Image (cartoon, rainbow, N blue to C red; front, top):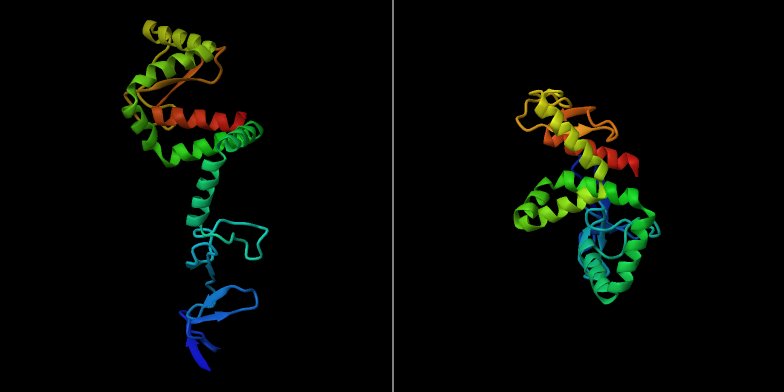
Length: 209
């Protein structure tokens, strides 16, 4: 019988096998130096990782709450299945997207907030695609185009005064956008910086779907 001292200073008696692990009734491995830290062995690659969501995808149907495959093996299996069943995967994804539009928008917002450089890199790599995308957006939103044109003419004629600070965050900006809360009221605008303008529209998308 050996006595093990944990990092917290408590002395834990245990019989430590040659592998250096203790086995509990749950079937999970607990490292002998830290009984509260569980480990789990991937049934695919046989590698051992901490039993956390960082290394194993969650699965409520399993007793320990995680899948049998580690994340690396799970990704490889998913990619192999998708390649072998591409048409089925495409149809299933489209059906799911139609039923869950709010989740698609929320995921897109989270991704663009976490990776703002992705859109900039895409624009730099595909400058020829931008005019076509702008034309497509204008064709889909004629009321917005009309409101923008009226507001632009009002600024040039002096009916609308452009401030020097963003009316949303209060920071000074030399490039202020005109944001319409309602396109049927083209002169009812607030001047906001590009960062705040994107944030406002992302919030509206998440609330309107």
